[in-house]
Figure (spheres, one colour):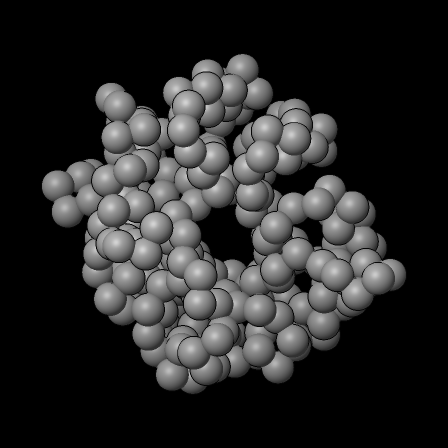
Length: 235
């Protein structure tokens, strides 16, 4: 299974994004484009980044009625991204509809993954705010199993849950894990986190790293450190 480090490009303008990307003269990192940048710049920013040679995880977390998600995914499939996502909480039917919409007439499509529970969600918040009384770990595994039933390629989950997701859904079921910080770094607003090396050990296929790279004094050095810790001799 291929592993990679995905940089979360949480910028609010293409000027800030390009100022960041222009520092990378050797690598073409895998990039996550989320709501902030996509809503600021629109689909054209995706086309421009693809033209620069980057892989893209379009992180819009669709969650709506099945027909709406299906139609939205059909539009996103034309952007030639490499990965996109939905919220698993939207039900199996919604995930199936999203997959159908994302699949192009020739049968090709980007990877489609589902968000189980956000890494900022603690068990206390889930129970008090969302009235979900089951243990967090049990909820994450149930949502992951639903994503597999729906035919998706994997899930977004905490790196602490990646290994168990593999146990429940199989070793080929992708785990894309935010909540990764360097051992000597700031935790920020994430709750369920770990280091790049530990994420690999637990079973993450892709780690999503934002502020430890984008806000570093030397982003390129921080990215290379992350790749080294997560991939070791693989890359």
